[in-house]
Image (cartoon, rainbow, N blue to C red; front, top):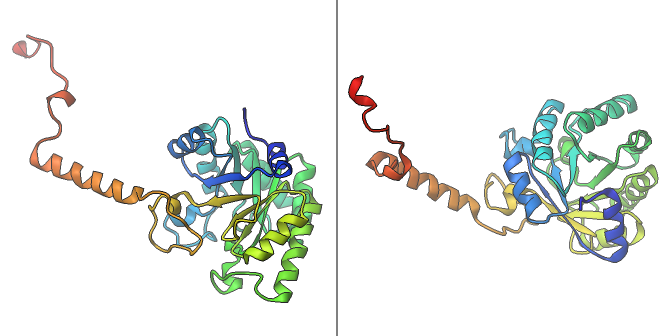
Amino acid sequence: MSVTVSTFLSMKQKGEKISMITAYDYTTARLVDEAGIDSILVGDSLGNVMLGLGDTVSVTMEDMIHHGAAVARGTKNALVVVDMPFMSYQTSVYDAVVNAGRLMKEARANAVKLEGGVEVADCIRAIVDCQIPVCAHIGLTPQGINALGGFKVQGKTADSARKLLEDAHAVEEAGAFAVVLEAIPAELAERVSSELTIPTIGIGAGAGCDGQVLVNQDMLGMFHDFTPKFVRRFAEVGDVMREAYRAYDTAVKDGSFPAPEHTYAAPEGVLENL
């Protein structure tokens, strides 16, 4: 049975934790879906781990549509949430609605995600009014990394913690069905989670959140440009892949691949009359 936004709310009410992980392609999405993960986030983190851009700011709507559609084709049960990229919603409420609609129609998303709190509440409300589910994202917001001055933990002062609480309530009141809390103190995330009726999805926000999300390449040990403190590697798939590539290279060069069992034979007599 497919996971929906209603499933998220029900899971929070029952005290059941929500699992979310990123994916950016058909093959990975199928594996994630078959593993029983509740939700797949097609994150603009693809700018870092798929496109080598070094940030999420440079990611375009076309990038998100391309990767989102591939993930949607590989998913049967998980809720597919697609990120709205930088400047696809900050310019106006009208642009936010149009671009959210594109992600639903062209990327076949089940929901969209955008960053910000009070300042984007009008956008969230307008998108939700168009029957498009919205997941909010507060705390460390990677699209605003230049304004934030780097990847820094948020909510560490009384003023910033108060602002984060205001943001959390604002996105809930605007109609968001869930909110991602990134890189904030665990105690603050636990308070936010207790005050909201919608689920919180943590990433670097402690175990008190209603669910957790990690970047696929981070948790599999495939991305080494930088590793945030909150990442746990559940496997070293990168090492396995590297060794497989080396073994393939060796087999090709020493002639052991392809072997007879990997080769097609012509029917007897076919080549005699050429």
